[in-house]
Amino acid sequence: MAVADHSFSMSTMFNALPYSKGISGFIPPPGFAPRASATPLHAALFNLMTDGKGVSYFKNMISKSDKTVLQRMASLLTSDSDYFIAIVTNKYGSRRVQKLLGKSDDVDAFFCAAILRRFLHITTDKYASYVTIRAMVVFDKDMKKAMYEHILYHALDLACNQHGCIALNDIITDADDPYYRDQILDLIAKNALCLSNDASGNFVVQHVLTLYDLRCTHNIAVNLFGHCIELSSKKYGSYIVEKLLEAEESMVVVVVELLDCDGDMLMRLARNEFGNFVVVKALKFTKEMSRIDLFWGLVQKLMPFIHLLRRSHGSNIANILDSFRLRC
Image 1 (spheres, rainbow, N blue to C red):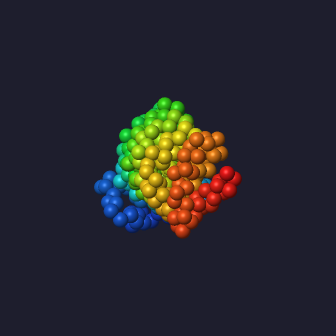
Image 2 (image 1 turned 45 degrees about the vertical axis):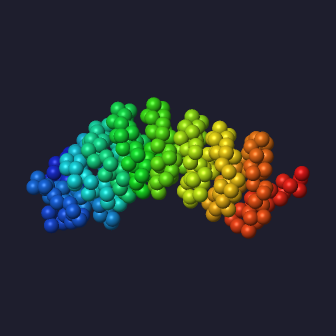
């Protein structure tokens, strides 16, 4: 059923929603208890936002609604924090709220306040987190500033969460405020060691390193100095050390640590299932970047163990050493 006109009233909108059947049509998610103030309109709107079969109707309704209708719809959606959470943590509810973001500053103001009230809950949820990501693209400067303050405050909690780390990476990529972008990067660099050892946090460190921000990359390398060998022997940690080897400034920090350790330790790293990739990359990039002093230092340190490297994960390293020896 189509809405006859764009003037908003609860009864008009309620009657216009084909999926509503009064309060009995409201099937709340587990753990959600509507307050006494909940109306049939809340139930109808909940079904409109979360029903997987209502995509075309929702698009049609939004396209025909003016800013006043959308503003009042946003007001109703955000009138209760638990109600809003129930919607945005739903796969379809999240997508439809994202469609409403950016329609007008007045509409966004309602959603901004609702997101900030339950920021960590929303931004660490599998579906709701995409509402925060979208908000950081379309909100105006003042609303983004309020969001950035919450992001900074909760950055480490987000980084160490399986869904929050994805949201934080997207937010960092799209950050359009230089001050807050640098603040977030500095925070990640300062906590690089604990994040590198975290199952989710390491993805944030990896992502930040792919931005090739020289200052941030340098700070991460400095904060990880003395821990690169240990990280290199772990699956996710080795990815981070490999990223550090791709920039000359941070590459030097890693290779110096490799050269400072004793030969047996470097040999064990070279034979490690993850560490061997780090050593191969160290040899490759020291040579490509014309840091022959560092390249030769690694070769000399590894050469006495070439027979052991051939019979392990270090076989590729042995091949590099063989190739170098033949040239000499």
